[in-house]
Length: 116
Length: 118
Image (cartoon, rainbow over all chains, first blue to last red; front, side, top):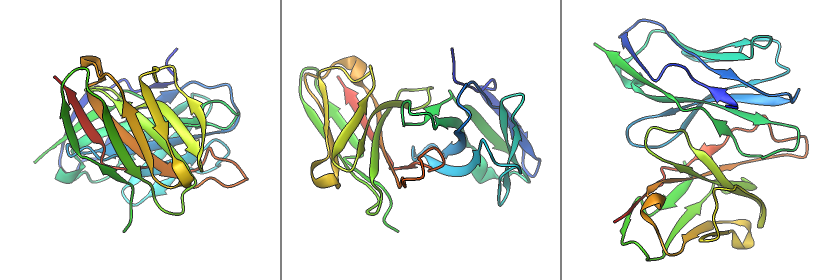
C-alpha cells in the first residue's frame, strides 16, 4: 500500500491565487513527521515545511501552511498568493519514528504551474 | 552557505562501465542519505549512514551498488557494471539527528547527479 498519496499529478493556477496541494498518508506509528519539498526544474529538493504528529497547531512558514487533519490522515500544503516562481514539482513525504526505515518516504508529486 | 554538495552534476557512461558519485553533506550533520529519482517519480530511499556506519540499505540497492562514508564526512556511491535501468537522478541528503529522535529532522538535499547510461 502507498504510504504517501498525492492525487493531483498536475495543477494550473492563476498568479496570486491560493493553491492547495493534497497529500494523504498511511501509518500505524503514533510518532511521525510530515514534510513538503519543492523541486524546481533545476532539480534541487527544497525543504518547505514540517508538521509533527503531536503538533496541536498547523505549521506555517511564510506563504506556506500545512492543513493537518490527523483523523483523516491528511496533510495538505496551502500556498497563499501564488507567484510565477512557485511553478515546480511538490512532494509530500513522511518519516516514521517507530524504528523503521529512517529515510523519508515520498509521494509521486504534484506538478504545479502558475500562469500569469 | 555550505549546503549539501554533489559531484558531478551530470554523468554519461556506457553500459557496463563503473561510475562513482561524491556527496559532501552539511558539515555538522551526522546522517547522510542516498536517494534515486526517476522521471515522474518521487525520490526513492537507497541507503543511509549515521556518521561512518551504514545502518540501512533498501532492496533497491543491488549488489552492483556500494556506498561508503569514510571518517563520517563525505560519502561516495559506486555503481558497477552500469545498466540502462540505472539511468536516474541520484540525490544525496543530510540531517542532524539528536538522541531525542529523528522523525522531526528535515533532510537537506543536494542538487543531485544525473546519470545517463547509454
